[in-house]
Length: 222
Ligand code: TIU
Image (cartoon, rainbow, N blue to C red; front, top):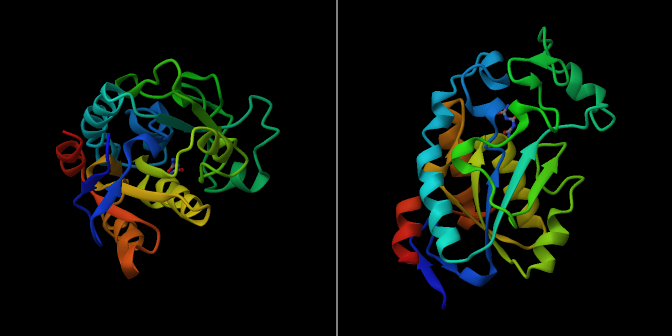
């Protein structure tokens, strides 16, 4: 399987399939499903739900080609020992991380709302990174797993574009990974942040990486 040329901005991306991991960020029930933590905070989950189908297709293609897939989930230990007080109280909402929510304790590992949506559920052998922060590299073993698997490129998808996706792309870029973000596979609760979050990645000659879409990826993969 040779290099695949992906139409992208600011210029074409040379994808090396055997070295390119699909990194799906935080496609969790609490962020995407009606009644979850995201909606409880007043957010419009439909802005995120449009990413489910393109992600499902991309994930199916990735698996069919036998390429590497990694999933992440944002959340905390049941005893909250890894939850900074600053994060616990941020937002001044009535219910915060660790409190009982509509799908179990909010953003706590092992609770229903913390888990990945059924449409994109991890297959056996696909690492799931439980992360306490917005970036997937902070306080996780992601970098070690990628190095052990000789992954040098990442297709980063998931939610939300300007928060966990952007933070992770920046962390990955500083660690030497080449990142491609398919625009229809990432979502924000805020349309203006979706647009700017993608612009920030591809500006200045691809300061953090490349932006493309799932159709271009699927076309190049064949
Ligand atoms: N996964 C992720 O982006 N977590 C967030 O908290 N996102 C928000 O947009 N709040």
